[in-house]
Image 1 (cartoon, rainbow, N blue to C red):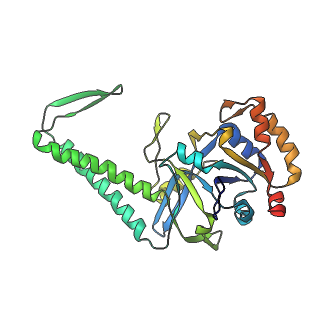
Image 2 (tube, helix red, strand yellow):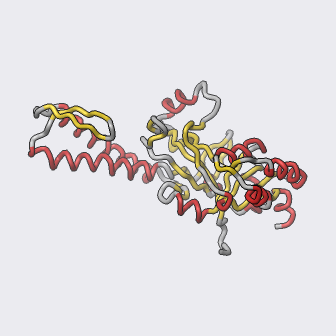
Image 3 (cartoon, rainbow, N blue to C red):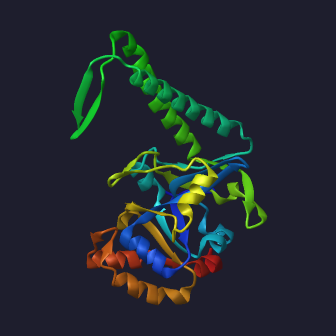
Length: 289
């Protein structure tokens, strides 16, 4: 369907070199931690994959910052597959909305603390339960506690979900980037955000709720990627594969034709040639569009 507005029908993920874009095609897009600074004392590390929907012909400032290679995936397909996890960023000019979301998180933590206190002070008989192969032990609660416990339990879960869902897609309208003022709103960012405590292999995905926590995790690491989880896509999901110049296309297509798999899925000869047909250069776009 033809898109007549100022945003594309595809979501673009830009990167810096040919090996990285081929790695994305072979292994999928990797989640990484984004250091999101809301104010001088509010800074988080949030696990995500970022995209933009800037028209390619207007993307030269963006590509000069993030790289001149890109993969463009169908926005409609991704929204269908990752409903709720994929959203455009909500740009704020006032901290009031951020503070409201953090107050909601505080309510979730308070509810959990009250629930823990009730559980700790319970005087009922010892109870042992097996859930999903794991054994849990605790004490039974009297009937007078049931209503409060259920309310606190659902509050702790729901408030946490609403708070992190809001916070994960918030970004300041403008900020500092490499010593210069940057209008973030111009980046037209979309994100897929991993929920806090999502299970990845045998581990739970954590968010870092302070700059110190994030920096302690980041120090000594080669990159910000999260192992054990990638975003997979199909040949049909890909709208374009972008390289910087027209002269790079023949060699890049040769490498595509030799690609054995896409996101761990074995490619047929037809699929490899279909991939090759999606390659275009920024140089061509700048000249012809």
